[in-house]
Each structure stands twice: as structure tokens, then as C-alpha cells.
Amino acid sequence: MTDLTASPENTLAREGATIAYRRVEGSTPGVIFMGGFKSDMTGTKAVALESFCRDRGAAFVRFDYQGHGTSSGRFDEGSIGLWAADALAVFDQLTSGPQIVVGSSMGGWIMLLTALARPDRVAGLVGIAAAPDFTEDLIWSTLDEDDRATLLETGALLKPSDYGDPYPYTRRLIEDGRDHLLLRAPIPLTCPTRLLHGMRDADVPWRTSQRIAERLAGDDVRITLIKDGDHRLSRDQDIALLCRTVGDLLDGVRSGSGCGSGTASRSGSRSA
Image (tube, rainbow, N blue to C red; front, side, top):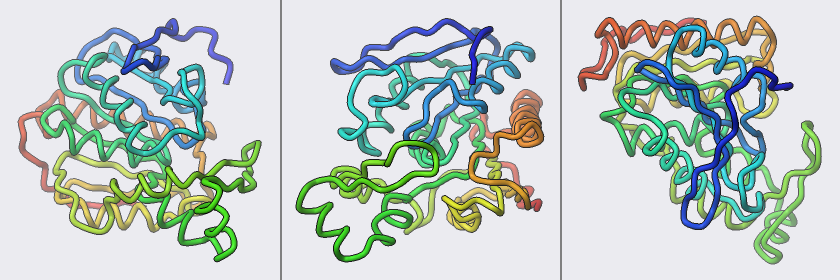
């Protein structure tokens, strides 16, 4: 997406790497956006959220993981643990006060890992086709014996992608992912959580959002299913829904109904 009126790009140094980011100064609670696998911070949702937060006067940050966008590093040397550490460095060094964390696809996994690492500062979560455990459930489990053998023996496997060049799935990605799986046990998070998912998502089944909701410890978890929505949820109506959802959480935290005080709301409702 063309990014003509956006915040200037800057870089954050982290252990010899450079993490590219764009930041809007503003009030708290702020919003931080975490992108998907092989995506970058110039995508439609990230840019739209920046504009939305700027108009509201809320602080906002978006960034590229190592090996993504204009950050340093090679994509095929990345892993969930590395990218989660990138996200945590950005969270710690570029944001202050309570934050609404928005995660798209893989970013939904990184979002949850960030919230687990910094529960006292995460005031709310918004997942967009959130995909925790995708390395195990959506990659490894779908490979046949020959592909698994190739990946283990050579260290990588190229698979076609609907979004451009083939994706390199690496042994490092799969094995490191197993150290960060979340859907095999309860997730001890109680902040308000909103999960948006298209029912025509061909990449991440919408029932993944249901599994997340079931695992989260808090009751203030709502799933919104978009019947004709795809994986990206980047249409105008999808962006409008995303901005409304983030705005509602911002309003809730400011009015004291969020979890910034360490208490969880008890609505326990879902919408579809």
C-alpha cells in the first residue's frame, strides 16, 4: 500500500540487527501492530490503523521483524522466537503505558507471546486471523513424508504461495515454533480480547480463533466472524470493522473497563 502521509521510518538497534519502525506520538493507551508471516509494515491494515490512531490522538507503532520489509536479516534465518524477541524489543523501547496489541495472522501468535511477557502493560488484544501454533498445525502437520524428509535433511522446503514467491519453510522455523506453542494448554491472559476472522480464510481456519478463545483465561473474549471474509481482511469494510474494534478497546481502557488495572472484565460474550 502506498504510504505517502505516514510517519517517518526509523530503526531500532537490537543485538547487531536493525528493526525498522514507524511511530506516531500520542496519548495512552497506545496501539502497536504486529504483522504476519513474510508481511511488512506497509500493508493496508497497518497503514490504516496508523491513520486511525493519528486522528484519535493515540500513540501508534508498526514495525518489521528481522528478515521482513526494510529490517536487517534474512527471512529464511528467522523463527518465532526471534520475531517475538523483535516485537518485545519494540514494545519495551518504543511504547509506554498501557497498549492495545493488534496482531495479524502470525502476528496474532507474536501478540499473545508479547502479552504473556508483559501482562501488566497489555490492556487489550485484537487478533486478525490470528495464527498461533501455525508452524505445527498448518505447516508440519500438512506435509507428506517426502516433504518432511526434505525439510529435515536439507533444512528448508519451498512451498507455493498465493501471495507471491514461494515461501521457504525451514527446519529452524518448525523446531523453534515447538518451543512457543500456545494452544496445547490454558493461556493465562485476562485482558479484553477481540478476534476477527473471515469464514472464507483459506490459510488459517476460522476455528483457530475459537480455539484461542477457549484457551484464554479471561472471560472478556469476543469472536467476530466475517462470513465472506478472506485471510487478509483488507477490504474497506474489514478495515472499518478493525478500526471500530480497536476504538472500542481504547475507549474501554480510558473509561476504566479494560484490564490496565489488572482486573479482567467479565462479559464472556461472542459475536458472529
